[in-house]
Length: 335
Ligand SMILES: CC(C)(COP(=O)(O)OP(=O)(O)OC[C@H]1O[C@@H](n2cnc3c(N)ncnc32)[C@H](O)[C@@H]1OP(=O)(O)O)[C@@H](O)C(=O)NCCC(=O)NCCS
Image 1: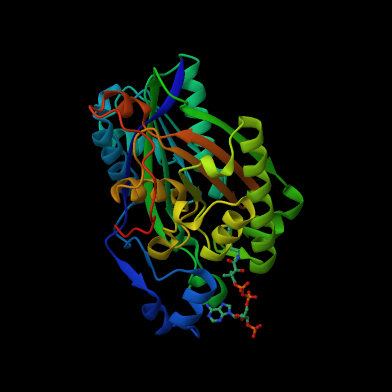
Image 2: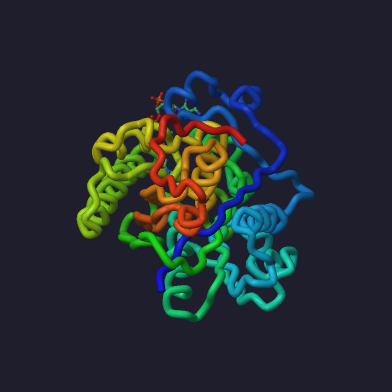
């Protein structure tokens, strides 16, 4: 049995924080932030909002997109580094809010690569017959672990959640495979200490490693899968910095019009960034059933990974026209 993505959904907090809002408190400028990162705005949760509610909203949207009831969900996997409390994790509350009463629940932490690990685990559960419908949600409240007085990091991070429903498919490639890697010797370049609870990053060095590792991982995965870069219909790299995404796409030979640049409106949302990019692309009509999607992430650990999936093959099967693989013209999106 193969596993595939059946539905996608996202949720962003209502509060928009523009670059100009940050200029009022920091020695920075809209021009610098846009030129060096591509970011124009980000969303922040309010003090009385919970990440569990945001994650549950994203999951509800993914279930609605798939036409699946919450009662049919067998497992909820939440990828996050910023749960509302140290313990419990988010997954029990998310399942309860959804009404997924019989679902197994688990949080995982692989920083910015968390959503790809969640997809891999979900596909393994479905393919082995241990579960039928698995929700994977990337959810982050990075504003709560950002040093808002440090201009080198304060402008980079945002909050958000996005979810995919993974289930069995009868036709198509499905969730085809992953290439994961890690290097703990470089953990000191990007971390948050338990006591301080603020993200600290050696930006330039992280940048260099991010480009190299994401490029290598994607190259290995494509070679192993017998796929050429030009066959990829949409490439969704971790949305940390538009210059990093561009450098990786250029190294791989993927044209920019097939690359997601959602970072402009979300900033870096760690585990939520790849599914937010997928949800935005679908909303913009850029991800048609049967499309081939490449994904790649890099983050604290260092932990990185690349993944390859086809998009909603079941929907492609049931569509009257049978049309698949629509060409992609642009991937900029604002929710
Ligand atoms: C963080 C990042 C945007 C910084 O961009 P950069 O071009 O490397 O900038 P630098 O850190 O070299 O800083 C260049 C200058 O800009 C200044 N600067 C830093 N942040 C600034 C800001 N918000 N506004 C204005 N100036 C700023 C620095 O102080 C430095 O000034 P100096 O030359 O006088 O010392 C970039 O390194 C990056 O994206 N890193 C990787 C992030 C990432 O991939 N994370 C993934 C894992 S989550």
